[in-house]
Length: 283
Length: 211
Length: 128
Image 1: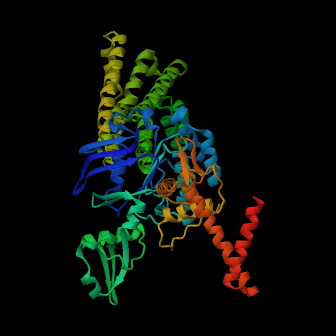
Image 2: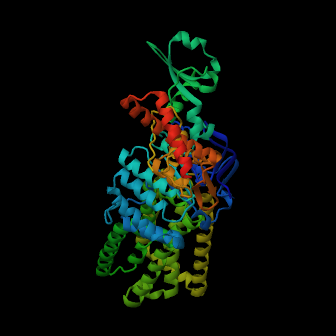
């Protein structure tokens, strides 16, 4: 078992929207950022992985097994956190704890859970409807990490959280990944903090997977330059990924290998790559 | 399964508490009026109300999306709903039999205990058994319309029973010609069959549902 | 050992890590046989990708600065002559810079300095 996630020709039609066909392989032991605009198909992909939706075509393998063959016991190996804690809001933390204890049985790790709850400072007897968004997310993460899962799926889980909590989450993910059998798959439309730790970036746009590459290669592949219109014309058309013309010149994202080596290029962020690529596709 | 029922109990904690109080109040009132038979019939409404509440709570929290990827089969999730109804039905049946034994009521005393028990099992599950597959099929929005329709049917039934006591007694007189034990067995059989068909239907609908 | 990552640097992050570990080995801060932090721990602490730290370690291993034992980790490799030479050249450079500074203060000429080195060398040879 070397791959945490394998998607082969995965296709799903939802009204006018078509996801895929997607082919994607996530090796175990890494963090993958699954990025794209809202409505690009990130959540649909994760729902397909979790068997909340069924593919029209293609194959989904998690931890080496076809998801259709997953037994309840095997599902304990998969953890997931959504953008909200989908539990009855009258439940208190204690109720939620009891519920998961009963749900996961032997696999449930009381100590891991209480340690995480203590670390996040979550209140014991308050019902979760009074939890802030950040607290719900922290509780969701604590629950996900307390049953010994080897694959953690996060669907927009950190969106809309304040920077301090996002930083905590980052720490927790890095702790989790210290075990080389653990894998994290994070979908998000904002990656400014995750881009620090992600090993791979998979980019989905309008239901199509544009690329999945190691983040280091990706960042080295592109550069940003501020040019005049005249300089721009001299450049190879293929080198230009996207541009932002303004009144005093034009900012372009370029492929480093296709421009002269003495060309001065600035480093790009993952967000910039995302923005320039999407805008580049519009024209 | 136990985890799901625990979740339902927590979600319905307040409602259940309220329901028990209401049942006691109604029970007290009917005792005073000497119409003890009305109380077991109240149990018909209990699963209807509880399932409606559970459905509302589950839809609001979107809990299905959370549970399905967890270590549980979709079938078990559906089963937990039915188990809830069955538990209420059994409580209702036991309750009615106890009432027959301890409270003197003209109608109840004529019917043997096992017939009361199976009649209660049938009456308390029948509405939910129709309701659940419909709810799984059409979802929360349309389910609300279905609720209203079902409430009307139940109330129509109540007023019919209330207004035609003679008819019921006549029916019993005719039925009494048969062996009552066979009638009891027949009702039990129909109840089992209805529940089994309904559960199979619901499980099949739920197995294909996307979230 | 301190490792600093500069986002403003034009060097890729793996190279920054590689160079700083190499320097620490060369200046003796890390000793031969010393166990280096695991790839995952280093990635966690520096908040960089595991792939980045793995690449830094891979290149250090290719250059002979470290060697990895499956399941045990990466250790500072016994330094080969080439490496030692580089290490000593660094020290010599630093010492000569100091000598030149003193020589200038004392007003010694270039020839006088070389003569001094030769005398010292022969004295050392007798001792041996």
